[in-house]
Length: 140
Image (tube, rainbow, N blue to C red; front, top):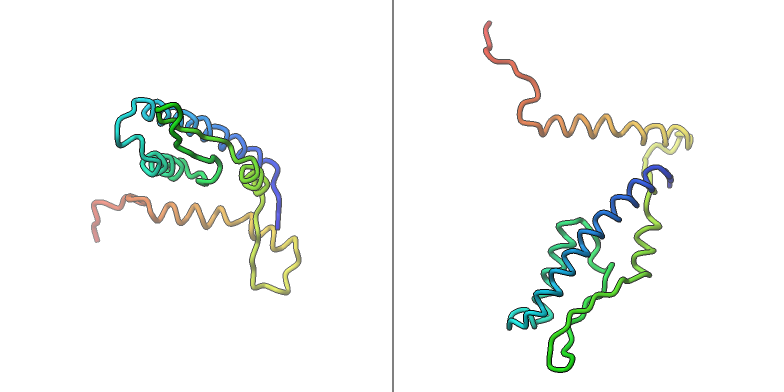
């Protein structure tokens, strides 16, 4: 297992931005529940919108706890941050597990080979690109 502090910092910055967007979604959901329209009083409906937002932002769904409750005759939507799950998620930032079948390699060789994976990933992205090389018109 390797740890890169720079990657961890980038991932922390990225999740902070995503959580701000998720917070805006939660505020919008809360306002919709306050409208007291029948389909917004269903906990499953609000929960599905929250899960869709998490999926869109590539965030785990268990970072917040959701509940829809009736209080004094009105529906309320409550979100609470799940600090335990949030802490578990953050602990993984910057960590990579290197799996290899080269048992005779040293640790340094394994790490160097892992760091060179960006070349393979770059080539894979290029292969997915529509126009990798323009060869028109073709003449023989």
